[in-house]
Every structure is written in structure tokens, then in C-alpha cells.
Image (cartoon, rainbow, N blue to C red; front, side, top):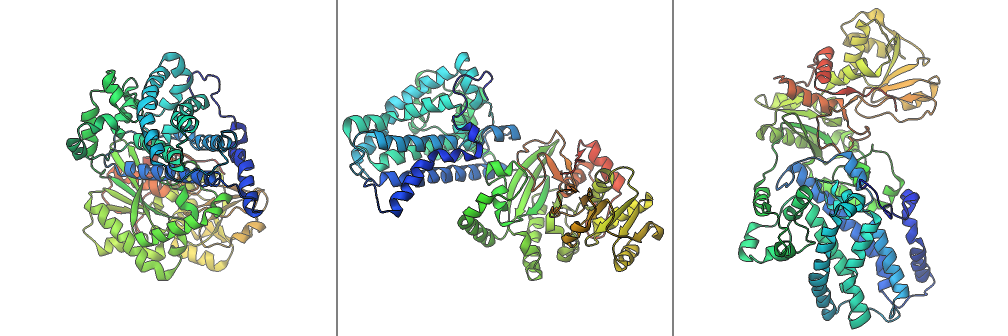
Length: 619
């Protein structure tokens, strides 16, 4: 929002929320009706509007994913600062201008003269005239409109909303108040209106192609990474006056009073508003190499639609906890293609970059899904991918690699011990985070004063650590069956009297993987389910409480956090991810994998000391 919002700041359909697409319903319904009842409109342009709008959305999304991936890796990055959730929320309505364009196209077809005669696919004279009109009056008028928007009166009421984003991403280009977008639409309509009203040389190529050009150049200018080769400007020196670079416009967002031009910088050179640091910043961006991380968190894809929840996916989904969305089922063709691509890729990629104190943090994603980790026949291939990631991290000089989700599964690699045994000279420290996961459950999740808990699920490294600590604190740990109790007694070094069997009538359940989730139906009302596993339990009871999986709120010093980690809330990190960060901060020169565990008190105190805070509220 602008600092002093002016009139027509909000979009007309803002009250509709996610139902805003209904504004196009009458035209879409008419299209369907015409096809079903063979009442075709002779003009093919009419039927191409909706596919064109969808193509524009896809085009923008490709730029978003490409930009986020490139910035996460660091190569050719221009502004080396991070995004935050407030910017993601502010820019979440980037599709509003596409809806407005659709309305104008439909209304224009119905009201402008000559809409009954079929529009040609291509007319060279119309395309050339569109290009000339853009290079002439559109670029010139935009330059002065843009300078006017930087006057205090208009800037405070409108344009400051756009400039709230110092670090740009492609969709920043269309993040404007409604009135400002309307002004731009009127400006960009000049070529089409002149052609339609005076020369009658319009074509679908000139109308749709011009809009695509505007989108392409807007995304290019706000992508925050440089890719124009220096050789291009050496061969064609005058080209720098005709086409801006991402660096050129990025400086406008950091300097504010320079580089006002739309896509052709010539007017900044003519009127003396060109930023003198443009060339140096451009060359510095081209020399920027990939980031070398200090800490890597290795995770993997979960459900089929988890691809859309990644930082490289849909911004609105990635910035909120992962939950099922009905409309993602409609995207199954794209989901199938993405799953096929993930299967073919068969390795890891950089998904996220953060900074904390002097550490460069990265999240790497294994392109495999949860269901594959549950198949024994897939173990060999999965271990190969994880092993390659460990060796790559080691070759890059990474200090710590933490294993997230099922990448540390006991049946798969014995909590990472497999790689340590195979490569005993590894310099990178492999961390499974079990000690911190147990610490969070004991120190934070279990209510103070608890005297008895019921333990459900497979007994693993985390559950044994929790049970041992609770028994030492005289908290009775119970199971449902005698064989479970026997297994627990054999795995602990504690007083057996602190263990016993019990019924379902316990108010606090510690639950892990492998338990029968239908047991929830037998729990008394008000039961608190506390997971100690990587994955949350299925919530089957509305009269019970469910805690998050072991996690903490990130330290305020961690920057560039604008995506949620799986199902966790904003700025929350899983215990397994935090464990790697704290391991590096403390300089612990040992692995935490296999049967190795740390003192629960030691890892908890270290987390608190480095600014991590308890995430102690149930869902």
C-alpha cells in the first residue's frame, strides 16, 4: 500500500477475494455456449482471448520460477538482499492486471467498429506500425509520466507502493495501485487504438504480440539477475540506448531518481537522468559467481503437488503452510509433466537461500517424492542421489549438511551413517538433527507439569531420546502393548519403573511414524497429539489439539525468508534444519548421525543462545 493511498488505489474486485475470476464468467460462458450450440462467432480473435490470458499467466510464472532459482544460486545476482513475507503478500495480486486486460479485450471486441469482420493473423504493416508507435510516443510519454509519478504528491499516493520493493522480482513489475495500472493501460493502448481507428491494419499478431512484448520486457527488467552478454554491447554499442538491462532498471529501484525509461534508455541519456553507476553495476553483476554455501539442508518433494509449494513454484502457495488445494487437482497435466521431469533429472537442485550471521544457508531438494522413499526397491537409487549431494557439498567446502524428512530414514541409510562409513574422510559434517527434535518435544511441546504420556508409533532414535529424558524427569511413559513396552525397556538406560502399559485414556499422546492413526478415534476429548516425526499426523478429531512437528521460530537475524517449510507456519524451521545451522555456528567438529546423539540440554541452550524461539502453540 502507498504511504498515503489516493483514490482508486484498490482494485474494484478486491472484495471478491479468490472469486475475482468470476468477472470474466459472462464471456467465458458465452464462449462455451457458442461452441456447444454451434453458434460460432466468425471472429476467431474472440475465442483466443481466454487462452491468451492463460498464456500470459504461464509466461509470468516461468519468469518467477527462473528468477527465484537464479537468485537462490547467486549467479549474476544484482541486488544482494533478501525478500520477506510482506513483499510477497504485497505482490500477490499480480494477476489483477491480466484480468483487467481480459475485460478490456472482450469489451473492446463488442464495442469497437469492425469487430464483425475476421481479424487477420498477421499484417506486416500493422506490426511495423505498432513497433514504431511504441518506440516513439509510448516510450516518450511513459518517461515523463514516470517522472511525474515520482513527484511527492503522486509518489506518496500511488507509486510508492511499487517502490516498496527494493529487491525486485518479475511480478514486481505489475504491482501498482489500480489507478496507476489504468494509466499504463491507456498509454499502451495508443498503438492499437491508432491502428484500429485510422489505418485499419490491425492483426492478432500486433495485439497479442504487443502485450506479450510488454510482459516480457517488464519481467526482464525486474528479474534481479543479469544475463545480457557484454559482447552484445561491444558489437552493437548503440543497442544500450534501445534496450534496457535488468541492471539498468534495478538501479531505479535502489536509487529512485534515475533510470526512468520504460524499455528504451535513450530518454534517460537525453534528459540527463541516466545513473552513472549503471555500467559498473552491470559488469559487476555479470562477474557474480554462484554462492558457496556454509550449511546445506537436504530435503525432498513430498506430495505430487508439493512442486507448486516450493519457492520456485506459486508465490502465494509457497508463502503459506502446505495444505491441499482443490484447484491443484485441475492442474494434473502439468503435475504429471513436472513429475516426469523430476524423475528424469534424478538429482538435487537449489531451492532456497538464506543468510544468518556469517553463514550462507541453502536448501537443496532431492527430486523424489515421499511415496518413493517408502518403497524398498527404490533405496539404492535414493541413496545414490543423497550420496552425490553429500559429495558435492563436501567438494564445495560446505561445513554442515543436515538431512531432512526421509533422507535420514533408518531403513534407508541408518540416519546418514551409511555415508560416513563409505567416505570416512568427509570434511562436511552430516547431521540428522534427532537430538534437537527430541529437545523441542521435551522442552517446548509437552506442557509443563505433565506426569504421564502415551507413546505411539515406531520407536526410533528420537522417541528413545524423548522417553529416556522424560523417565529421568519422573514422567511416566506408557505404551498400549506389552511387546512395545519390552522394546522400549531394552532401548533405554533408565529406571524401568518409569515405563508401563496403559489404556487410550491419556490426554497427551506422543506420536511418530507407523502408528495406526485410527487410534485417534479412541482418544478422550481434549487430547493433545504431539508428533515427534518428520511428518504431521492426519487430523481426524476436531475436539482434540494437534501440535506442529518439532520446529522453532527462526532467529530474526535470518534473512531472505519468504517461503514456508512444508506445513510449518511462516518463519518456522524444522528441528532437523535448525540442527545443521546450530552445528555450524557452534563449530562442533563431529557428525550427528547413526547412533550418535547430543545432550538435549546442550543443543536446546545453543538454539536459544542463537536467537531461535519456541514454537509452543498447538495448531
